[in-house]
Image (cartoon, rainbow, N blue to C red):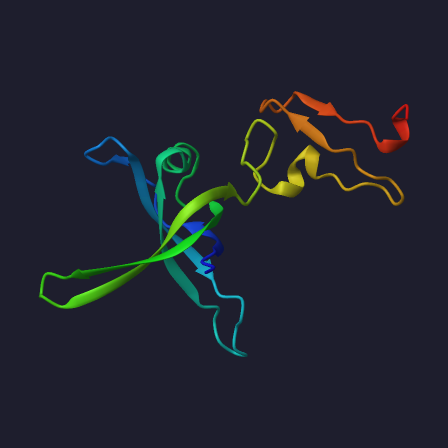
Length: 154
């Protein structure tokens, strides 16, 4: 059987870390996911999808993600049945997240501006020039330039 869900959307609220009675970290949050198809003359529809993350994934999400951030979630669809306050039987669908990834550049005022085009790393290469990838320790001024294949000794 195959049960894989991959979504990208914006968090509708800050995630909150909780603990089960056994001390297991868990968080639940909602992603606002735009539908890819728009009928002519209509507005784009948005689905609000409930996500649950456990253990290290929950701790990661609560530490690094905030309301409005674009996130990519990979996980599996899970259903739960329950009875509401009025005695009606209900079924809930949610995504149990295996991985949550950043889906937009980090907003860093130290770099100068919040728009990706304002950042030095978003500079486009001149025609015929391949931009060299850069890796960082996380500080804005510490980028290491990786040599292109032409510079390698073998």
